[in-house]
Length: 430
Image (tube, helix red, strand yellow):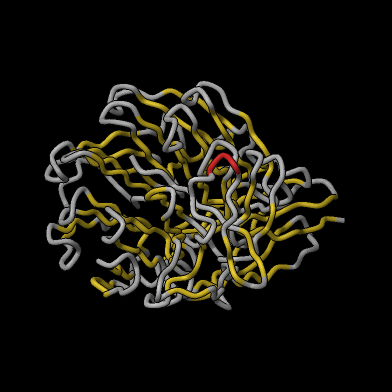
């Protein structure tokens, strides 16, 4: 079981950690910094996975690169590059056997610690992407996809040699995250046509139950965490759409009931809690947001950027993927407190007349390479009116869109969600 969490506050431009009394065992000298031997991402590192305190891998999304470290992130080597494919996540069963999910039908496995990768070609069902991975024990691997639909689970019980395909379209239209306590009990999250959802299985994925629904179409539950010290305590990050804000969801009874609290950013994705009350969230437009009261209040630490994954190893060490790879530890040589100039997501270039004429909505989007796009229209209260289009983009270039707009005068939001994240454009009909 992997737990994602971390902590810090900012003082004089340096991220210093000050832990609450409930986690006093962590050294007050611990701090979050950027690892310097790994390149700053053009967009972001979508995932980081450490097998132990020294051995880890990072997946650079848009640049399609895998990096490996054997000394806790002080030094990295590039192992794999495929710049035509977006690398979404990376996970290892042991020192040698690992898996790499992408935002395409290409899914990879390594048996030599990442030095060579082979495509997995024996999944008995169609996959358009693998957005979530969870490997545990000696043999079991789960995966899920995709953020742009359809929804499915893949499962292997023999180290990825053979696979089972589970159609999840009855429960969700998209899946982003999968997290298991053991081979049989686990969770998956994403979105349905009625809101962001968390699903639970107790029989290894044979059947599922919806245990949370945000009730707002267009939202997704992006990441899940099970607290290391208490497996009944769970957290989730809810990515929302303008003009609404993202949410922290929390359960103290293994997912049977949930509370929801707003987070001061719309496109929230990363979540990680050190204790039941002290934790952090982040997304495309923020660094680490910190809370000491389970999300009742938040502080923007103004450190880091474009966060997606937080992984805790112990009370004194954690990692996070974002514009850089961030490490929480007492001290390191190859770290600094840099925040890259491109720390936050770069929005798609959208050319749009924000005032509707002739009951038509016309706009263009400049894509810098292959992508997936979901176009949705929301009213001024964040209520979904319609999904305009889902489309796979095969090459760079400007695409023009035109849709009927038979709606009354008012303010609306055009939401665009692509491989790198989401954004909203306000439009007005007089």
